Amino acid sequence: MKTRWRTVLTILFAGGALLYTAGCSGPKNALANDKKGSAGGKGGRGTAPVMVTVATAVSKNVPVQAQVIGAVEAYSTVSIKAQISGQILKVDFREGDFVTEGQLLFTLDPRAIEAQVQQLEANILRDQAQLGQQEANVARDKASEANAKAQLGRAAKLLKEGIVSKEQYDQYDTAAETAAAVVKADIAAVANARAQIAASRAALENQQVQLSYTRIYAPVSGRTGAVATKVGNIVQANTTELTTINQVQPIFVTFALPEAFLGTLHRNAGREMPVQAVADDVDGSADSGKLTFVDNAVDTTTGTIRLKATFANSTRSLWPGQFVRVTMQLENRPNAVVVPSQAIQSGQNGTFVYRLKPDQRVEIRPVVAGERLDQEVVVESGLQAGETVVTEGTLRLVDGARVTVMDPNNRGGRPGRKS
Image 1 (tube, rainbow, N blue to C red):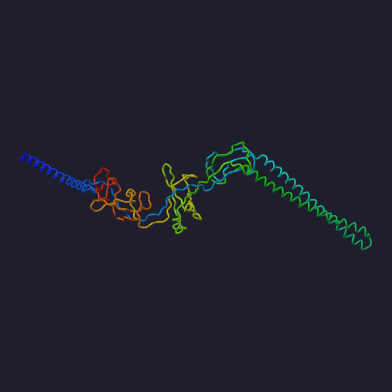
Image 2: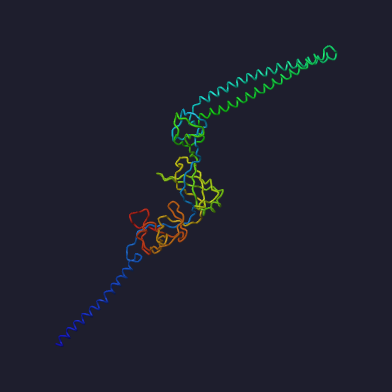
């Protein structure tokens, strides 16, 4: 009996020892395998290299640019109104046409003013005839005055000789004074006739101006808007708007820059500063202009300063009221480090690039990105000229990953030399 229980205890002891050994060795081996797997996975060790394309950071002079949204503004906008009241007889253009300065736009009924012009012209002819008659009267009465004075002179001699009486002499004297007064009246009548002619001519000129207002011409070249008043309607002087003309060649683009750019604007005052405007149309082509206006104060509500650029708009691609993307070149920055825009990555801690090291592994390099220039980005800090960065294949990369550089001209996956 004792021997049987010893056998059972021996078997139980052996089983417990086996379980203890298995329990100790199992987790240890698992931890070792886990460490091995982690060592193999860190930085791509133990895995196939990632196929990437690379580019070299270069140093070059780049323009300092500001990119904002601007609005197109007509160079001038003219509201066409009639300067006299009357009925519209004819519209000499189509809505939306481009018209040139001096082109006939509207014709108003001129008949009433033409009648007044003809009446004034007739009045002037009448007044001129009266003037001629008055001038003839002056000549006649001057002759009578001269005769009366001559008779008065003879009467004075005869009075001294006692041939005529004092009463007769006084009659000759009165006749001479009367003749002189008649001449003065004739001269005044001539002056009055001339004044009447001048007044009639002034009235005629005024009516001729009014007559010219019956034909309305384009004061500027530009594109017309809708015709607000059609043929047959009566328009009121300086009240009824007929249409508007927007001058679009040249044309303005207005935009605003943060006041931080004010110092740059002051440094470059007097220098031509190029501006480009791109409309969101089909081809996205840019129009080139130049800065022509800087406002005299910063807007305190927005902290911006208003600017205006002038564009020739030879293709008429810019339209009043249109929003455009404005790029203004402020100055040039020498020896700036530039990389392709695909190399700049964004993470939780900001922007970074994958820099290729000599051992064909990559490292994460935090950088500060600056202005974007077409397909390139200026790197403010974090990268030196000559260093190589990954431009394609970044989705599979981690810090320390092994890479194989592909030929950028060969997308079939064959390795190429590092650019």
